[in-house]
Amino acid sequence: MNFSISSEVPELKKGGCFVIGVIQDAVTSNDKAYLPDKVKRLLNAVAADAGFKGDVGKSIAVHSAPETQGCSIILFGLGPKDKISKNSYIAAINHAIDSLQDIVSKEIHLMLPELHIPGTRDGWKTRQLALLLKLKSYRFEIIKNVTSKTYPAHNKKLVLCIGGHNGSGETRNMRIGDAIGEGCNLARELGNLPPNICTPAHLAHTATGIGKNLKFQTRVFNEGQLKNMGMDALLAVSKGSVEPAKFIEMIYTGTSKNKPPIVLIGKGVTFDSGGISIKPSSGMDEMKYDMSGAGSVLGTLLAISKLKPPVNVVGLIPAVENMPGGKATRPGDIVRTKSGQTVEILNTDAEGRLILCDALTYAEKFKPSAVIDVATLTGACVVALGKIATGLFSNSDELAEELSDAGENSWDRVWRMPVWDEYQTQLKSNFADMANIGGREAGSVTAACFLSRFATKFPWAHLDIAGTAWNSGTNKGSTGRPVPLLCEFILSRCGF
Image (cartoon, rainbow, N blue to C red; front, side):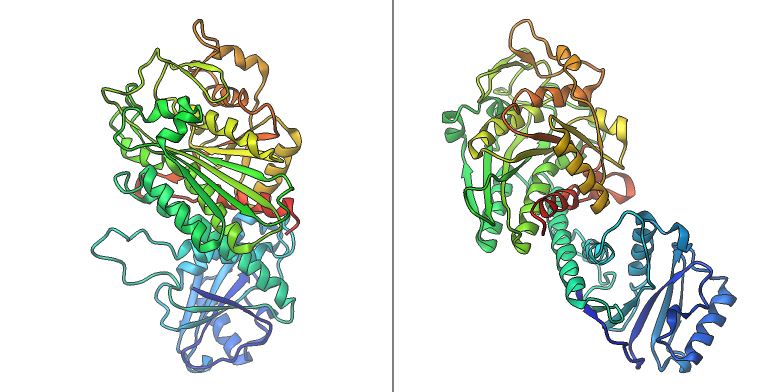
C-alpha cells in the first residue's frame, strides 16, 4: 500500500475511486461538498434505495455511472456523530479497507468528515488509519505453494484527502502508524511461523539481520557463554531440547549514551510442550506462539529504528525451546539463578519466569530508566481478562500509569493487576529460596510476584499477553500485540 496525504480536492475521472466516510443519518449532508451536485443526487438516491443510513459496518458502492465520470464511489458508515468512539472508528475503517478488495482502480481517494473522537489527540485518526492499512495488507503465505491472488487494497495508491489541514503533520502521523504496523507484522510473521522454522537460532538470525539493516547493535550469546554468565535458570528450560538456547541483546541508541535506556525483555519460548510436566495434546500446536513476547520486542525495535526517536532502547530476548527428554529438567530440581537466588522447580510448564528472571538480572547492567518484560506467561491471565486487555503488573505506580495511558492512546489496552506482598507467601519452598509456582489461586499474580523478586533495582512492569498475543479458531494467527502499546509508550516518553 502506497499511502499519501493531499490537501487538494481530487478530480473525478474514469478509473478513479472515492471512498467516503458518512456519519449516520447524514448521508445527504454537505460532507460530500467536493462532489458535483449530480453525483450527490445519485448517491443519495442509491443510499435511499439500499436503506443505507451510515451505520458502522455498512457500505454501498456505485461503479462507473455516467454521473460519476466513470469513477467508483463507496460510502461507508461511521455511525452516529455523538457516539463515534475509538472502537467504532477502527471498525468502520476496517470495513472500508475490506470494501476495496475488488476495486480495479490503482488510485483510491479516502475522504472523512470532520470527526472528534473522545479521548484522542491530534493525529490519532491518521496513525490508526496507516496502522490498519498495514495490518490488513498482511498475509501469512511464505510457506504456501498456492497464494492469494487478491489482497485488500494491495498494490494500490491510497490518498487521504484532508482538505487544507496540516499536511506535514498528517504525513508524519502516517509515517508513525505505518512503522508501527510494520513492527506488528514482523511480530505476527514470527509468531505464525511453525516451530520447526522459528527456533531460537531463527530469532537470533532475524534480530541480527534487522540490526544490520537498521543500524542498531546486536549480540547473540550461546549456551557456553550463558553458563559462564550464571544463567542456569534459563539453561534449565532448554536442557530437554536439541535446539540450543540463545540470548539476544539489541541496542538502539537515539540520544546520548549516558541517558538511561528503556529495556524491553521478550519471552522467547519458540515451542512450549510443558517439558516433563507435559501439556495436553489438544491445542498444543498453539504453543508456537509462546515466543510472542520476543516477537513483539523485535517488532518494536524495528519500528523504533525506522522512526529514530531521541531515546535509548535495549531489547533482550531469552530464546529457548521447552521439550521433554532424558536431560530435561525435572519437577523437584533446584536451580540457581543469575541473581544467586535458588528456585525449586515444581512444574516445568512454568518455564517462562525462569528465563525472564535471568534476563531481568542481566538488565541491571544498563542502569535502566524502566524495564518492561513481555510474556505469554499464564493461562490464569486469559481466564481473568480474556482476549481484550493485557495484564499489567508493576512495582511503580508512575510506570503503570504511563503504560495505561499508552494503552488507551494506542487502543492496545492493559489492565493493572496487584503485586502485593500477601501473594508472595504462595511461592514458599522448604528447600530453596522460592518455588516456581504458587498453586491454582491467583496464578497470574504469583507469576508476577516471582518476577518481582528479580526486579528490585529499577522501575519494572510485566505485561502478561497470554490472552492478547494470538487468536484461535478460524481466525487463528498472531495479533502483533503489544507492539502498538510499546511503541506508544516509548514515543510518548521522549516526546516524539
